[in-house]
Length: 216
Image (cartoon, rainbow, N blue to C red):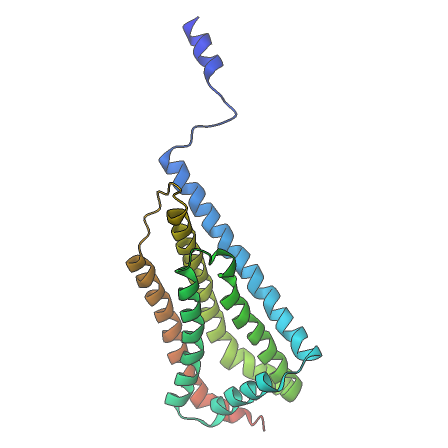
């Protein structure tokens, strides 16, 4: 009889949430967010392509020309510095957003800006140089871009989690997250380091091969 009562009291439709299962839920949510950011990035690239077709902005087009000329004619140091400055500006903006308790809806913006520019630059190179431009992008631009954008997606997730943590602390919500500004900074340094290594390696390849395309 006691066993029957115990069975009736137990709710089979709401399994007990243990610490282990709670951490698993957090991991799943984190992975879902990264996939969502990936989708946002792909959509933003297409937006950049459409934007170039319908609104050819002189300032952005000049920047595309500057990057292309640098790839073809500049020294390794200049090519590296140009690329790393663009990456650093994006990471710095993203890091700052993550330290704001109102930064949660703003975290995708740096990723979107970079992705839109990727689409704009790709359309510019294709429209100007057609097949040669496509080969140039495939060999010298997209490999680096894939690595740096993936790293940026992970950084965007870190920024989101940090901003959420700060918001929960300010609003006096209970939070079990083990997050600190030092850990946040360390993760950003590591992820930016991955992008920097990719930029360094790709800049070396660019200085060797870019001039052989004769795009001008």
